[in-house]
Image 1 (cartoon, chains in turn yellow, purple):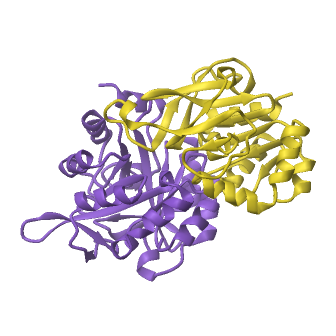
Image 2: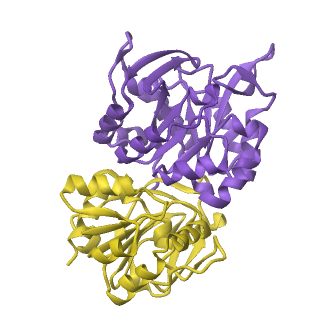
Length: 204
Length: 255
């Protein structure tokens, strides 16, 4: 069973619909027991960094998530700001992140962007997986929907699972042990997204 | 490579899907959830849904409908209509909508954008600017309440002010071209594009795939939105939900 962390942000129902369609059990997790009962966790997110961190704190699920991710080593997938929250900190906010992955979050510097690019980075962009298998099994030239002005910078290059380009090449998916993240929205990316979520569900 | 976006814009009235001409004479074209399901199959880039009753009736947004739409959508969804407060914006985002469109409320309360940006982030805040040519000189003017109220604002200056306050995207919506299928107002797009450095989407006037091609050729990364083109087929305007397939879409992007 997959726990969809329900802290009032992100599209829980869109994930639930896709998993139902795939015949995979995924339920909104609102209590510590909901999280403990699951074998995998999805941490969705839409919004500003501090707001999302605050909402997660208020949900009362922070401690159980730390336990299940850091100690029980359950596979977890953070989406968009949900991925950014897994870093130590973000330029977007003052609060600390979850610190599940050795990384920080930075803003795109528009001076590095080619002319005629704008912030936020919004729309469908190519994603280049750096390793086959894993989340990108069967996805050779996928494209996904992005909606963000900040991106993750990992301390260690080996944690970069996929990259994309928007003026600069940036990290669009990460993996550090059992911790996974995508900067894009697989739940809103048609069959490329559905297959990625299926791959996550089928990770050993 | 980031691609230009091709966006169906659906209008809701009394819970049904309608299409207007010059923001008037709404014609019933079907059930919104059914339309979303068809657009899912067609792998639409993004979807905009505007409730055209909400501001006029001063209703709260129909959260039940929004929630239903958000959960059906397999593509990003932008909701607009009757949005007046930060609390409403937060609530809509919490229902699983990626972007909230704000329009009329900003005339009296522009700070709504900056206040909301702190909570939900700029990337989720879309400012829809309804524009009509007014007066003897036929100058572009921002209008509200389904095009019926003039504001005295110039759309280019207004867009630029909204960008400063923290908007994440500007939608320029032409009342004069709504439902007419005569092409976009490219001069207005040019003026806004030169002034603001945000993602920009154009709505009102698209009548054929050539109108999209012209827009992409001239402006590169831009959102091309349309209503009639994606819900009607042929000169008798028979209701048929349609959208270019992958091959047709790629062809639009190659010069």
